[in-house]
Amino acid sequence: MKKITLTLAAFALVFTSFAQNVVIDRIADNTNGLISTNGDEDAGVYCSDFFTLEEDTILGSFTFPGFYSTAIEIGDLLIGGDFFIYNDGGGFPDADPTTTDALVNLTSVELGAGLELVLDADDVESGFTINVTAANGGAQVTLPAGDYWVAFAPAVVGGSAAEGRWNWTGSFTTETGVFPANESLLIDSDDLFGAGATDWTSIAALIGADFPSFAWTLTDEEEDLGFGDNDLVGASVYPNPATNVINVDFSSNVELKSAVLFDVLGKNTGVTLVNGSMNIADLAAGVYILNIETNNGSLTQKVIKQ
Image 1 (cartoon, rainbow, N blue to C red):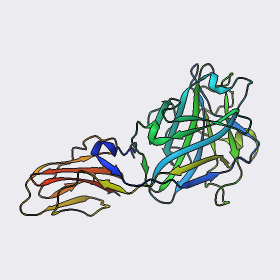
Image 2 (tube, rainbow, N blue to C red; image 1 turned 180 degrees about the vertical axis):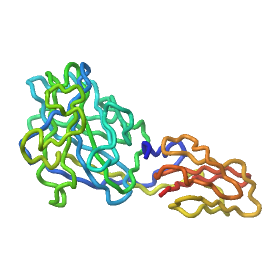
Image 3 (cartoon, helix red, strand yellow; image 1 turned 135 degrees about the vertical axis):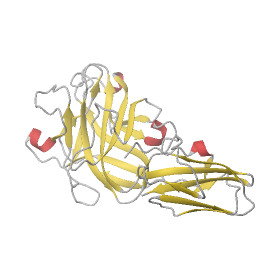
Image 4 (tube, one colour; image 1 turned 90 degrees about the horizontal axis):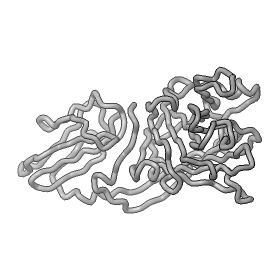
């Protein structure tokens, strides 16, 4: 599956209401934390945590608690933040940060532009929040129900294991009291620690102790969408969700000018409307936007490919 990014603003959609709900909440009740830092002098050391979405979810914010390893607050060395979501590849992420193949690939997110520092009770810089929409340039990200891995690391000046090192806090307690199906992983592509973890590696095996999960929280974004430019009547799009074909029916007085199916990046998929049908069998599963222009108005319709 390709990166999933739904650019609603590009299609003049209007938010009519807005709310956030906690989707995943993993409590910071493990005294251990693992390095997850991308120093600009090496390839970085990243940790990843498994999670499952039971339904399609518009991602809101991820908060990652942790602590730094030196007396220097990490904000003094902070360049930005790297945030990734991967599809599950059978107990492991299906890619890693040395590639650009993440499902959601947000790197060098700047403070105030989707990345925020979290302070502890003593006003010490201890963790980070990624607002996915802001980090993605205002474009929302929708994940279908399924199994995923999330990885986060601050980008800092110097070596990953040097003064800017940040440690992501572990968790023994999940929202449901049930551990994730897959334990947390770490990758150290340059083998900075000499443990041979140059591919995704079990943290429990590396430290010789249980490490079922990291602490973090995910909130969603839920909104009722008003299609501000939908003035076309006498048109229908079906089925939706669809697997192979989308059908578009018009009233007899409607003359089609254009029909474009945009992918999740806002790019034209190249799929054409022929005799009232679009063949989407070769498209990846996910969310698409169908934009239709006619002599009788326009229609913007979200379409889900199963």
